[in-house]
Length: 159
Image 1 (tube, rainbow, N blue to C red):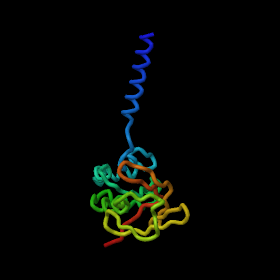
Image 2 (image 1 turned 135 degrees about the horizontal axis):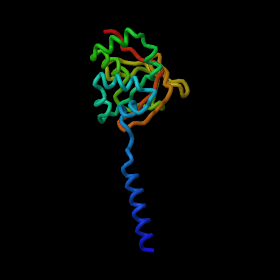
Image 3 (image 1 turned 120 degrees about the horizontal axis):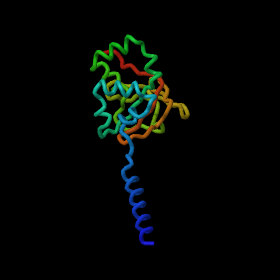
Image 4 (image 1 turned 30 degrees about the horizontal axis):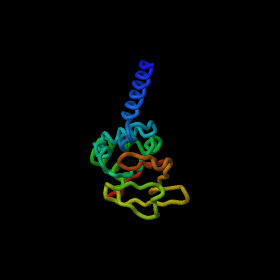
């Protein structure tokens, strides 16, 4: 009987220690890295040197374009961005808001991006838009903010 109790105790300790080691919520950068539909965005975040920022304290809101959204961007534009890290960083930062903004928080108007320019957001019922992009997956929680998956790549205004 004592052996059985010891075995049960050891199993319980093992299970509980396994639960304790489960990872908590992922950072925004880790959400992008773990979602196959955001693999292009993840690669570009790394190329632009933004991964550490999006793993940082935040909070941030990222309007994350899907792989399909990037396929709609002209190849020449993507090629230019791949050769100009600052331009790429500017485009990606245009998708980031300081602070955690859930779909319930969206009010029609303009919000300032991390890049410095404003973006127009609106909401009709549960449908949220930013500029001409539609949020296709809302409120993906991250440890340092929230990810709003969108169907288009946003381009900052020319200076």
